[in-house]
Length: 374
Image 1 (cartoon, rainbow, N blue to C red):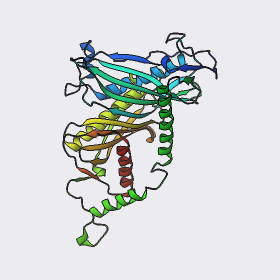
Image 2: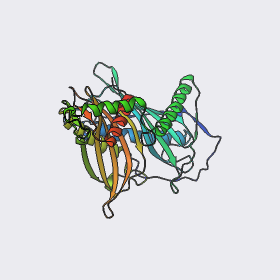
Image 3: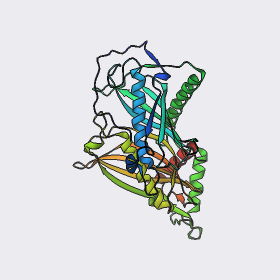
Image 4: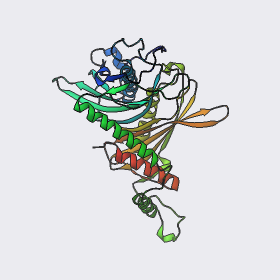
């Protein structure tokens, strides 16, 4: 298991706008020793004697933070003694995680490789790959992940500039362009969110067709709704969980570790999809995890999992993480998670009943179509 940094030291180094670090400065590797260190294996085991994907999410988040700091640090001074201007780097979002192999063996070492592939003013993209070496010597990829990190002033929590990224090879330039494109896609998705804009004409037609499927034509009324065979009302495909946020789960900035939030959200989503599909589903993709606000130690965290969309053997599951002040009962959304699962058989189809459920359905459909689902 990747260990968390136990302390955070500030620095007196000033920001240099002319400073730039090559991609090679951030290139790093790490080993999760599931095969070479059997004692570490216990924490990673699931009920199928495979590797818990939720714990892998924790390690990815830790590794992404390491890569981001390493880029700003450069290669003149070893990690642990900051050689960059004052900053606190946090996870802004998980752009996507594409699964090449959803079955992660628990008795083989996991090889992690990563680097910073794009740098903006205060944000940066980290690209990570995980693989396992089998007995025949074949190195098989598990997943590719892209996390977006943001650099903040530790005191004011306002964005601060990163050290620029020096792209030298054609491959690095192409990856940088893809990072720029991914940023523009995220911005367009935010602007075209169903919270801000009306559904498209195709989406409106989909909603109306779903509505017509639920009408009882014999009653000659719009109010008599029936659930078609093989469908489940969207409102009946929910699962909730509550988490107490203890100090042991804090990160080096004193907030609740983002990887822990991802793990608990994933496990809640998996349980929801398992109940819905009546089987053990496999994770196929993680899409557009947004960290809107940090979670304080001592918070009461409410996780609300919703199967938004389903088709064939696939389920799109969203999880809202809400912090509740148990004294005032005030709730605040802090994180949103999106997961795509695949069952080993056909699953029921989700049917929205209200207009609100219809918008949730369309939003899930958008995320499903944007994710990788072979």
